[in-house]
Structure formats: C-alpha cells, structure tokens
Amino acid sequence: METRSTPTPAFDMVLFGGAGDLVMRKLLPSLYQAHNAGLLNEQGRILALGRKDLSRDDYLASVEKQSRIHIKSHFDDAAWQSFCSRIDYLRVDASQAADYPALAEKVGDDAGKVVVCYLATAPNLFAGICENLAAVGLNRPNVRVVLEKPLGTDLDSSNEINDDVARFFKEEQLYRIDHYLGKESVQNLMAIRFANALFEPLWRREWIHDVQITISEELGVGSRGDFYDGTGALRDMVQNHLLQLLCIVAMEPPANLEADAVRDEKLKVLKALRPFTEHDVAAKTVRGQYKAGASGGQPVVGYQDEAGIPAGSQTETFVAIKAEIDNWRWAGVPFFLRTGKRMQERLAEIVINFRDVPHQVFTGPLGGSHHANRLVIRLQPEESIRLYFLAKEPGDTMRLQPAYLDLDFYKAFKVRRADAYERLLLDVIRGKLALFMRRDELIEAWRWVEPIMDTWAASTNNPPKQYTAGSWGPAASSALLSRDGISWHEEC
Ligand code: BG6
Image (cartoon, rainbow, N blue to C red; front, side, top):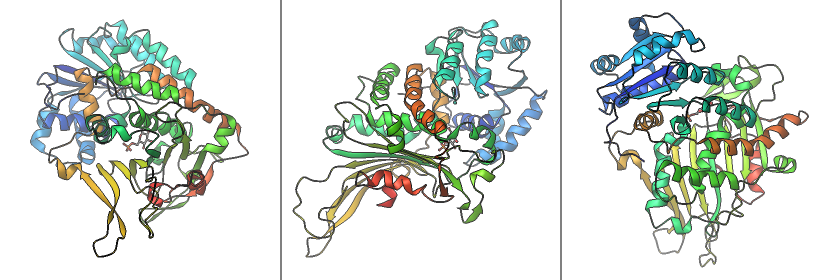
C-alpha cells in the first residue's frame, strides 16, 4: 500500500468545514502528528474554510485550544508553532459560488502540486461544492476530493450524491473515506492473510466455523442526537465500517496491492452476500436501543432521554446480524456482525473461530472443547493479534489448558504508529486509493442493508429491543448465536 518513508508531494489541503468537529477533533491533530514525524512535504499548506469572518490568528487560537484537548501525545509548543505556519484560514460560504474565486486565487494554478479538498460538511452540500469548485477550475486532474460519510441514507440518495459529484470529478479523483480501513490492525490482517503461508490454507469453510466482528462503544449518542436519530446504527456503522471489515476478512487474495485489484476483490464479497428476505430479517437480525444504566461507574440516561431524541423514537443504537456469503470459500460459515452504543466496553475486534479437531483423543473438561483455536484481531482499544490453542498443563496428568500466542504491536514494534485519519490523509496526498471505497462497493453495501432498513421501518409494532446501558446488548443478540451452538467471544 505505502511505505512510511515515501515523501508526500507538495500539496494544498483545503478543509471545508474548517471550524467543525471533524477538523478539530481528527483532521488537524492527525496532520500535526504527520508534520511532527517529518512526513509532510515542506511545500504542504493547509487552508481551512469556514463561514465565520475570522482572522488567521483567531482561527489558530481556536485550533490550538481544541488541539490541546484532542492531541493525545505530548503537546510540543515549538512543534505546534512550526505546524501552524502551514495553516491559513479563508472565509468561504461553501454554498456560495461567489466565494470560490478567492479560494482559487489562494490555491493558485501550480499543476505540479496536489490539491486535496476535504469535504467535512453535511453531504447535502457535496454537489454544490463540487459544482462551485469546477466553476473556478478546481476540478483539474491534480485536485482530489475526500468525501466523508454518510454518503446518502439509502441506495437512491447515495446514487444521487455520487451522480452529482461525478458530473465534475472523475472516479479516480474521489476518495470516499471509511476510517476503519485506516486502522493499523486492518492492514495487518491483510499482512497476516497474504504474507504468511500458515493461515491462508486454513482460511475457508473447511477450517473456519464462524467469524465474529464487533465494534462496541461505551459512549452514547452525546450531542449528536439530532443526526443520529435519523441515521441509526445500521447506517452509521454496519453499512460502512462493519461491511468493510467483513470484506477484508472474506476477500480472495488480490493479484497485487493496487487500488483496483483490492477493490475488485472486496466488491466480489459484497456481491456474494446473501440478500435478506423479510423472514431473514426477523430470524437473523437483532436491533436494540439502550435504556438507562451505567457507564464507567456513573449512571447514564437511556436513548429516549438524550438531547435531540424525539419521544417514542424507534432508532436502533445496537445491531447484531448473521450474514452469509454465498461463494465456494464461505458457504455455510456464518459471519456475525455486532455494533452498539453504550455497551460494556469500547472494543473493536474480529474473531475467527476455527473448527474443532475431527477426533478427540483427550478426555477431561477441555477434551472436546469448542473453538480451541481462535484468532482474535483487536483493533481497539489496543491493537493486538492473539492465537488461542490448547496446550498440556504442566504436571503428570494429561490435562489441557487454553493458552495463546500474543502479538502486541506496541511491544513488538517500538515505532510510532499513525492513527487511521493520519494514514488516510497521507494516502490521499500520495494518490493511493486502495483504502478508499469505490462507488460500486458503496452501491452493493447499500443494496445489502436496504431490505433490513425497510423491514425494520415497517415493523413499528416490533420496536428495537431494550438493553441496559453498560451491557453487551439485548439478550436476543446472544440467542442469535446460540442457535448455531456458539456464543460471542466475550461470553465464552
Ligand atoms: C463513526 C460513527 O463513523 O465512527 C460514530 O459515525 C462512531 O457514531 C465512530 O462513534 C466510531 O469510530 P471509532 O474509530 O471511535 O471506533
């Protein structure tokens, strides 16, 4: 994909929504880290755009205040000052064509420089922004556009946004971001699968019993109630992050790591996902909504009492799904997907449960153990890979005990690791598309989730199941797996 030492070319990073939450919380802190690591070209400039009439100094003061909160590592004043010398602020109302000539003038017309326009705004502005950029010539080949999710709320609206954007930009200029693909362990999963002879022969239905992918969050909807209530966990997390992780687990080995080679293989997986009938939605999905409970030892309110949530909302804050992939490699292997807010822990992990040995020679409690072999790929809070197996307990009996081989990346590789946004921003500047979604992937992902969305929307008499904040979700989520004789990893 990329080597850390590849220098970035000269660039202008134009941040639409420059005073917004994403820019303050993720994008500027990530660019600061890249700057500190010496990864940004000296000719790299950051131009933040916002509707407010702020001076550069005022903008920088507000950025510094927020960055001191959001930059996790040591905040170095000298490094900060040198980073700030890259940043400028321009008052631009993204919806006003009249504001764009000033932007074009700031950016200039150096064809040797990469121009990245990061649309960290509401998606209903995307079409207008692209049209306004094109009107001032900012759609020439050296301009790249980063599109943040949500790209639509269903297949039709997603197609509409993509059609609008495609009127002004070619597909290879579009970087549809899914920050989960920028996480180190996701790329490590590809390394484990495709660089080691050990796993690939076992990576199929003959040897794998089931796959579990969990992204659980401790936080509730916080101040995003308004947005979240019209979205829900299926659109917010499953349609993108969880399906992308599933693709990385399930795809065939690509011929190389070129963007389209990887994306072609992911697309095949999305196309092979078994479509849901109404009956399947009832039998193979669980939707939940948190009620009051506790988080981090403190009492917390239920979803219905969060700010911005209308009374009686049926929006799901939890989803569990049994997905199936209809192809030779995966026929009959369930892929269980789960995500939720206000869960017991913040955790993202992929669990591969291998089949049991065909004949047991050991007796005793673990002799016929289910899932003695399990590969657990942790994405967060820490990044690690653990391979579980059974070993003999020391002593003169032949008793078995579970043990594991642990690859803790923090300990194994004592180098700084970029966070997801940093890696993806560098990839955009370098023109690496492999970790961004192509339009056809997006379409297939929407096609797959739509019947679930529609069936849920029509089942008003069967609302989401309540779960206590701070738990692992509704009991029905465990029942979904127990029908296959298994349980979620943390319940084992
Ligand atoms: C975002 C969702 O895409 O991902 C948020 O919109 C969610 O609702 C977030 O909280 C989770 O990302 P991470 O990297 O913190 O697990």
